Image 1 (tube, rainbow, N blue to C red):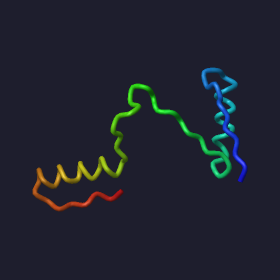
Image 2 (spheres, helix red, strand yellow):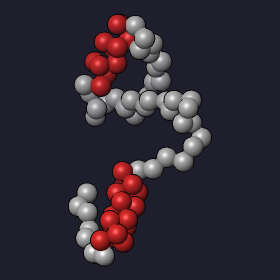
Image 3 (tube, rainbow, N blue to C red):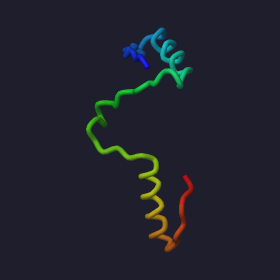
Image 4 (tube, helix red, strand yellow):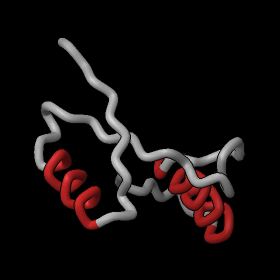
Length: 70
């Protein structure tokens, strides 16, 4: 598969329109959004990691053994 990297200026209406058009084709195009500078380099958590911690806290607090369904 041949790939091309493109930079689109999304601060303009035309750039946003182009991005929306590319997003309509998820099998062909993959969009990667850069991290904001405020959180770059910090530990980030996945949804499963967050809910597993919530599950532990709830079970410890209520003395139960409930499993959250993700």
